[in-house]
Image 1 (tube, rainbow over the protein chains, first blue to last red):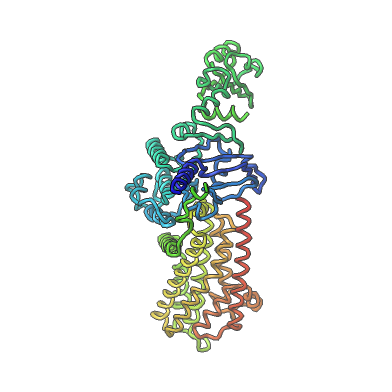
Image 2 (image 1 turned 180 degrees about the vertical axis):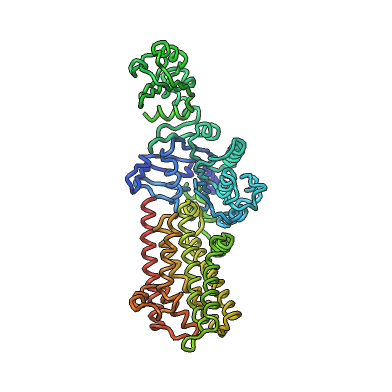
Length: 321
Length: 268
């Protein structure tokens, strides 16, 4: 009898760690104005993992977060948080949220806002722990309106932590933070995952996703582009960026030239060439060779500019096609 | 089995005690927030006080019309003027701004009971209403030779509390239908004409006959007449009709607010 109970308890324990903390199943979201924000997206979050939703602005990251929080309902598909409807209080008591908001009430102190949010939960995180985790030391008595952009962001992070939640949604958490504050927040997020919390964060910085996430889900135009560990996603990205092995040496060349697109595409290293209003934009993996040939062939070439593309830009531009 | 294992039933909803604490906390900080917001507290309390001092106490110093002390008669009008301002600006403009900034969304995503948000705003407007009515009464008694019984004062306070409700509903409609940046302007466009035509500044019987007929649709008119009644003045129309008028207005506003809320939900 007791053996049976133990076996049952053990199996329950193992299902608990494997069972999804949150799941989006075949979600399609079309807004009333006809914009298709998400197109058949499925996503599962498990205990103790950090998942990054990566994508450019308008990719549908925030929409996915809002659906998971029950702030918006899907056109098709289903959402579940801890096996329940995200709009239920039971689910909300176990989640913490950081949204991109315009402003919080101006004339409340940081301390007061944190205490208000702590009051919503039965077992909130101790106040001092929140202050430490979010780096609010020394600004606790300031009014929200007196905070700098980074401090505001840290206060919002504190509000997300207030309930000591098992699941955190962080929508662009490090926007406006300086490098030091950004790294401090990363360390906090890693610490939360180590304690078994699940974190879903959205970002448009590949660097951030790479530094933090166990899993990256790349979204573009509401569709899942690819998903996997950071290493997998980066190798997929590199492969998609160019068939050349040294995709990371990619440069963007802008200039005014008489050379035609077809001619340019035939040059060494050129992956892409587009002409727009007199200005030609060339993506090349061997910029020196490309430039040498272009300058030799076109004496009138001028307004030359060479840029390193942000890795995520190149990655997203090419994966979206 | 697996769902039972992952959802902790220990705290799946709020207990009564915690719910009450959330409501109290929300109200306390909403009041504090508005009190500290000088643009709000100074104008919402300041306007009725300054107007009453000018028009009730200085310009009509010691004057009586048909045996009615002007300072006491005008106390009713400016008391209503003050509480309507507290509701329209505190709830309408405040909620419009919080809706626009996405703050309301963050609150909705939290486990806060949504009613706590609305009630906190409503009770705060009532508290400001009580403060304004008390201040005006104190001014009238001290400088305007206004005498009133404790029962009359009690009835005024009770009316300041109940009378905020229709305007709170109206504020909600404003917040849900009007873009945040034009909310203060539109609130004024409603507030000032509604105050004038409702007889808050000039006694209703001195207004043109056509406006007197029009006043029946204005909640300001009904509250003002009830306020006059609570001060012992003969009011125009019957008391029960004024209460019915307020009830009808409140229900219409709540209906429109509900439609506005639905529209918002569909957009999100």
